[in-house]
Length: 258
Image 1 (tube, one colour):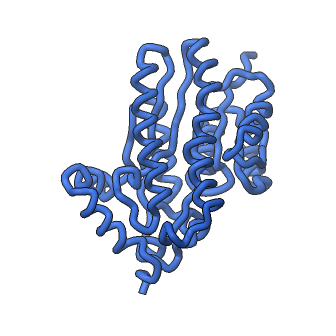
Image 2 (cartoon, rainbow, N blue to C red; image 1 turned 120 degrees about the vertical axis):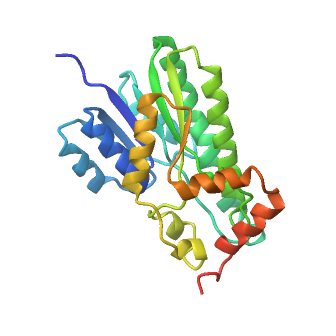
């Protein structure tokens, strides 16, 4: 009996990552799921699908955290990598401690690249593999009161497109999922519950995950979930950065929930 394929899903304790892991399990993938908080409940849910699950609690902002995750794969070929781990941070830049915004950069950018490079090298050597990277429509908007986060997502969106082009003849595909506001713990963890966007109706993470998973299976370069989000991305290509910054301020400035 052939060995089941293996998928790694980061940021899998809740939200989009957990829903993507469920889809992977439903498609018969064994899983290595990772997050910076306990995954006991999530792992039990995946096991109900009849696949093997290795849950790793690790901080992917560091090389040691990435190494710990890769070691959990036990040397097996990684068929799918879902680089979904991300960290948000709201409020004004001058009010943020450097340890806070550095952790956002280290998680969203540095840790993502530290994970992608070794996995992609092995995929390219085999001539097959699929990668789904969670970017954001935030990468298209100047993010007043969320400036560092939006800047990291601008990097991720651009980087995914660039390496997808570099690897276009390799048999490996890169897909960038670009959600808008989604009903996860993101806004709580980013200290944004007193903002307009923090209190607004949001997309269902299961729907967002399905959009990304299906796009990845088709080898699409990028996908924006939802018509309103697609409209925002289109508008961002016409408006100035000053204009998108002002629009973002109205959504993300502390106290706008009132």
